[in-house]
Amino acid sequence: MQLTQLLKLVLINITQNKVRTFLTTLGVIVGTATIFLVVAIGKGGEARVNEQYSKLNVGTIIVMGSHRGRIVDPLTKKDAELFLKSENIAQAFPILRGSGNITFNNYSTTGNFIAIQPEFQRSNNLTAQQGRSLDKEDEQKRNKAAVVGAELANTLTDGYPSEIVGQTISINNRRLTVVGIYNRVGDSGSGMSYDDAVFVPYSVGEKFLLGTRANPVINVQATSMDTVQAAISDITNILDETHRAGGADQFRILDAGSRLAAAQESARTMSLLLLAVAVVVLIVSGIGIMNVMFVTVKERTREIGTLKAIGAKKREILGQFLIEAVIISLTGGIIGVAAGFLALPVLSCFELTALPSLSGVLLGLIFSVVTGVFFGFYPAWKAADLSPLEALRYE
Amino acid sequence: MIYSSKYVIDANNIVKIYQNGSEELKVLDNVSIKVSKGDFMAILGPSGSGKSTLMNILGCLDLPTSGQYYLDGLDVLKASENELAEVRNKKIGFIFQKFNLLPRLTAMQNVMLPLLYRGVDEEEAGELAKEKLTILGLGARLHHRPNELSGGQQQRVAIARAIVGSPQLLLADEPTGNLDSKSSREVMEIFKELNQQGNTILIITHDAEVAGQVKKIVHIRDGKVYENN
Image (cartoon, rainbow over all chains, first blue to last red; front, side, top):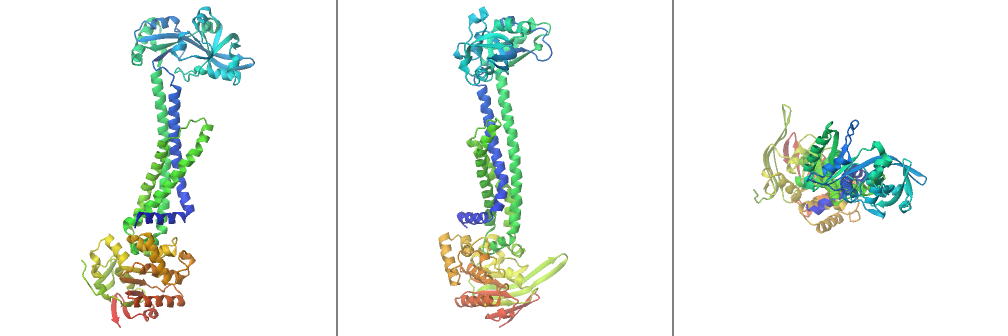
């Protein structure tokens, strides 16, 4: 029999049993939609990580006091100067971080403030989108100036960030003048979002906002990506020298490159995990297909006998039932991908970034067809293997 | 292994033994039967006589325990599974007691099926199917499904399906067994006409009345055949 004829025969059987076909297809629809969405979520996650870290300088190393226990012997501005003696280190800035109530007009929020030396801005891609950034004069004269991160500016002004420039804000009831707003920079690599923080001159942070609670973090730039490890070991040696009481062990040294790699790795692990779930769904739906195909073969045993009596060969019966399984699963696959597309807006409600991709569509369709072939084969083989006589006698 | 023969069926010393536990059941005991081209023959026997087993063997649906069987000159017992499927497709037209039409196909699609399995293209198969159904008085029922047809009509569809591929042998297994007397008479008239046109017909039945309308009767009892003309 020609393939087109076999296909027609199968289509007649499928379309005349719509409920059965639909119920069989349902599992495949869910499985394929899951695969498609999982791939989309995975791609979305990776894209988000890459975007978050896109502005991150991989040569950045952060040295900070350990969170374990109290720091007896905090880092100082002097440590930063000592780090600069290493030939692997291009820059080292102490920064101070704190948090508290940030108030503008009558609006108040809890937020972070970061005290920096002006050079810090360049090496962290912080540029002013409105107003100006911090400069040497602010640092030397301890000007009570502040530059606000893009996101925080939005929050404080309820969407009209430009209103804040030139105005007074207060941090823990200490008043400062906003001189500018930074451009968006994304994740800083130090676990703190710069877009959500207020920046003040280092000297202001040290004397005016924090006082004795000042406990700096040192932001180090290695001379290049390749010298990051050497720079870390130099830093360790220097800290061992200068902080004899606890040595370098009491500090945490983080490098941005490893953080990026770790984030990418965890995004990948996540998508793999989800993919495994989707594959399990498809296997279950495959078992569903197999069950229905077995019932179908049983129901049509006499028909199979008749077909054999009028000359159907084994491979034609096998082909017929296999094509039936594949069409059912492929239909389910196509509907599943469509359902996946429809579900994308739902995902965004849960703040999941999902990026639909061709590879997700193909993976879903391939898996659905493979499921059909794999789980349809055994019932189809059973049908083909029936002796014509036994099949004809079957009641 | 084909030799030219005047017989459509040339079966010799056919033995069929069913093994039932340790018990051997000899269903066919050295049956020899010859059907010539153009014959119109009935194998008549009560149930349990072995006639169904004989029909299955003659129809290439089952193999004998021993013996020789040539169908239209072909040594059936040496044929492979695929070759047997081809034999059933080209040389034999089956007509069953329960019609055995495919319920989801229309009358015309049912009749086209043997031709499609032979590789004939759809258009030609459709033409031939339409022609046969029209001859059998079903020209207005081409696109009806079996459940929309009466028993007599269904059996006529089945006959159309059996003859559409011009086989050497029409093999009918109790063809009137599920029909009322009027439809039975109609079906037997169709057989007579087909035989007059040169078709070789073998009917297996337990009904003496049916057997009475053919040219030649072979009796079967307890696995043995007895001929009387």
